[in-house]
Length: 287
Ligand code: AMP
Image (cartoon, rainbow, N blue to C red; front, side):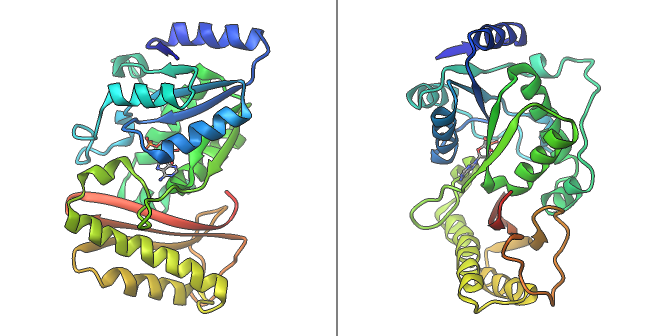
């Protein structure tokens, strides 16, 4: 695996690979890898000649009171795991390489960025869209892989690619979970046993709500919302940030008295356990 730190050498490598006629796949990450990340690398390897990955904890997507400084980092382990998973090229830039002191340009995907996590994390998706567009411009991938764990992010990146006519196929892959149902996240390392217990109420609420929708027990949007609310509220330790039932294409709220649209719905929740904010979701339809 080639480890490239500068934009200049990464561009040169990508130009060389393209000249050889190789298809390029790309998996952007903030590191502290788990099986969720590695599932994206695996899909990327199956569908492209060259697997490119990036490791960059993007300061632009963290709010002033968020966990940028204490975001978990273990670069040596990440490099080992990326190499073991078959990555060919790792783009691993320093902060100044991506955001020099006189950096002024940001990308805003309107509307979609204002819902769900965008409400509690103003500016978050502006930071995400900006860094992903920059990475796309540097790597020039044919295919890029994102996790449905961050469903809103995947929807936003897809829309950015469409709106800005980016020559990249954006793919959203399923959520990888621990055997107990908790969605894998780099932030799970923050969780005490008590926090983790509380977090499981959210995962189970969503998984059971999905089963309820599929079996016909939960028909209306309101019934699903109430069910998830009741289940998460059984934990006295989990503080609900939002429970959202939205259309997958617009991320606008689905009407409470409407029947759940099984082809175009995102059911998502965010909670705080202790100091840690966690999200989870399930998708009815395709991003
Ligand atoms: P991050 O390092 O948190 O920015 O995540 C990098 C990529 O991995 C994003 O596209 C995430 O959506 C994806 N990802 C994170 N957690 C999971 C998971 N549990 N299952 C699948 N993909 C995930």
